[in-house]
Length: 232
Image (cartoon, rainbow, N blue to C red; front, side, top):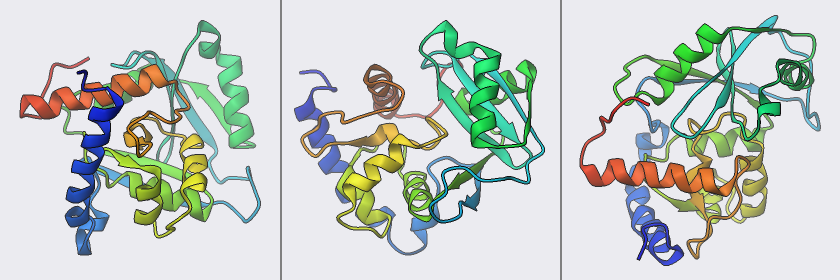
């Protein structure tokens, strides 16, 4: 039976759940899944989807990754966005700048391939020791969900309900799913680690095949018994 069979994944969820009890007690609640990761949070005003920003310039670019081509957006305080792309049209600079302009009004968006490719190397290289900073901007609830996700160790799996409870919002599993759909930074904010209780994939804004690939990738690292792997 495949490791990605729903029954096998449901067992992994249960195994992870008991381990998470210990990991999310006391001071361990603030430990992020990846060393060298820091987070700057910006709270959106109530009932606002987009609002003005103090960011004057965003640099962005495209890069290969273990999960396909991605677009990385960077501001002065860290990574603002990491999106995985599905078609050549997604790599159109005009479309990328329009998207960033809606999310960060009044900001100058400049393409910087070198910076994006260097950042991708830092993110996806298994041997990188470079510190990575994230700039998260969202509602109070979204920030709680994303912050909780950042404490889920690599190769662990959990349910939407468990994520809501870890975020201090028990019972808000549907809202947790909506927050995952709004996740601006794929892979680093590991929404791919959240499944339904029966082991089925649930949703994923970058496609279920990519979610399966991420889960399988982390399972291989777990089963190999070490963290280092060949660079992408």
